[in-house]
Image (tube, rainbow, N blue to C red; front, side, top):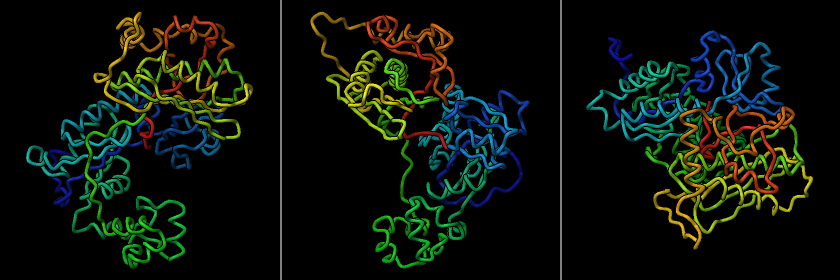
Length: 447
């Protein structure tokens, strides 16, 4: 730890850090419920189709893993405490953790809510060696958030990420330049980025089971068997990864989706879900300072067949009312039978651009203010008084029986959508009590 007299390992040339929170969702829950410390705890959707989002190391000892169906996790570890997720809380903790990273260096590349690459080249003169900076980060995260992280310190992103996984939980591992190949070559071939199921089969057929085996086979052999991917793996096996830390990755899409507890064939319920998801997508756009030009819906049938439909708007938007109108039109234009049974629906906004740069062509009777300002006012009320303070009338449960349609895998939260005025229109959906969390698609947290 910083300030200790213990010598730090040789970190010359190790400018890349990979910081990974330890069992992030579960750790946040244990921070707020210290009585659960030392017990197997699982965070995930508690419905029939819920999946494990995070598990403490005590639960992992029984074979519980992220993305595993909750039903299987219960069978493996019936004594575990199962907790529904609180996505807004995790997002807030993530923002504060990322602020710790950015106080060290502006060169921070988040991979998800709970992990990031840092290039600390510019911080060494101010804060000390990379290993000392890693210890400083670990100490600050623990002190400020009451949770732990593991840090890999290495010459490249690829090796730093492997190193952080090898020192979990609550550890630090430095892979010096001089010891790089000694660290890499004994590892299984599957440790290399890009080794999927097919590549692993090809490598096994060639008798290549470790990273060292791959490094010492002729490059031409790998190229013949795996094409360009073979060359990529060969260079990684020699520790070569030239990718730089990219501080700001462009967000390509924003969206939310939901899996129902039971397959749904009621268009009223599906429209209600599209309303709620449109509201969450719009709120995520406004929070990111973006507008979107293209709206898509995802419809997954009970057979697991997935249909997507999209439409490009005349003007970019961050207004839930407009997103919802487009999503419903896409749903009705999908070609599905009116009684098709769906297990999942999703709404996505793409073609993002800064909200400040978006301009709108007003019709003769349009006002420059309206739904956008109203929804921003709702955002402010939710920040001040809680997420349940305001919601569209269509999403206010009228009867406890409505809860029978509640989807799984998300924490309670509001429907935020076009507003009560939109809900009063003829044909608007009835209330929904399901919940989903808007997010940047493709940036899901690792556990």
